[in-house]
Image (cartoon, rainbow, N blue to C red; front, side):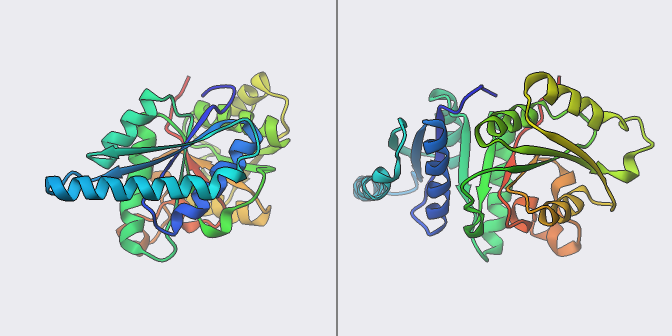
Length: 272
C-alpha cells in the first residue's frame, strides 16, 4: 500500500451504478490529487463488423463520460479513459498492474440479485488477484469524508487495511475503530487487536479505539457497530467471515458490501 493515492480505477459499463462510483472516485481525486481512470472492457464475442461499430460507440460513450465529469476534477489529478477488449477480470487485472492502480472504485446495483452474486465474486476475486483495495459504493454511500473507519480483525494482523486506514486517516483526520468478536477473547488470537493497535500506532498518529463485539458472525456484528457509531467506511478481507449469515444471504453470496449502506472497501490479506 503506497503512502499516497496516485491512480484510481473505475470499471464502467454505462449503467446507472457508474454514477456514484465515478462521483466517489472524483471526491477522492480532489482530496489526494490523483488520476481517475474510467475503463470499459468490451467482449470479443461479435463479428468483425459488430466489433468495429461497437468499439466506435463505446469510445463515444467514454468520451461523453469524460466530458460530463471533467469539470468536477478540481485538484491536480486528470480524468483518463480506456477501452479494452476481452475477458473483463483479466483485462482489468492487467490494466491495474500495467498502470499501477492504487484503488478500484465500483458501483453496486440497487436491487439486482444476479448482479449482486456476480459482482460479489468479482470484488473478492479482483481484490485477491491484484492485491489492490476495491471500494464498493451504493447510492447512499456518497459521503465526502471518512471520519470514522471501522476495521474488523479476525485471526491475523491486517497489514494492508492498516496501511490504507493510516493513509485515509491522515487525509481526513479520521478515527480508526478496531473490532473483533468477544467469543474469540479466550483463543490464541486474543491479543490480535492489541497487536494491530501497536502496528497502526507505529506508522501513524491517527486516533484508534478497540472494541470487543457480541455475536457469532463478525460481518453482522461489524455492521451493527458501524451503524451505531455512524461510521463512514468499513474495511474487510475477501474471506468467508465477511459474508452475512442466513440461507438467503449464502445463496445470493451477500457480502458485507451489499448489506451495508456504509461504503465497504475489500482489501486482500497481506500479513507481516
